[in-house]
Length: 202
Image (cartoon, rainbow, N blue to C red; front, side, top):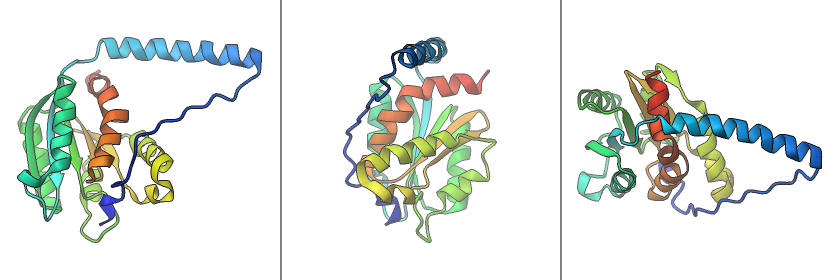
């Protein structure tokens, strides 16, 4: 299925610095230090613990078979966050909307969906969430696909992972494969979850 395109993602992160001009090199790092200091200040005032709700969109999985959902829970709890709910729902608009409403009622500040982000006929998670978002976070999908491209090549373009805000919550929609979940959680969500929630309340 389309949302399983990341089954063979391996986590190799390569960073290369090819700027050998000495003057530009010094300026570049000074500029980076300024931005890094601001980002670190924001992170210091961000909540260390975020109440999070997990939703798996699948027409075939049940909670007992939800490996991706379990990986999300383990990753969150390993960083000290609280999981206030975990549901598996059908990949249908009404079920997705109901899960989002339940997440809000639970007091969640973040919701992490997985599954239903491919291009299959039944994949409607992105369409459903996108029309509800108050603000979108296009950088999340862009960065996720960039990371995926490094690992699996052009097939990364078929992932439609998205993020946005809804009624005081930050909402992420990930592909359903466990390896895609790992990349998104380790590289993007966990490092910035508290920061995102803080920005949402400013």
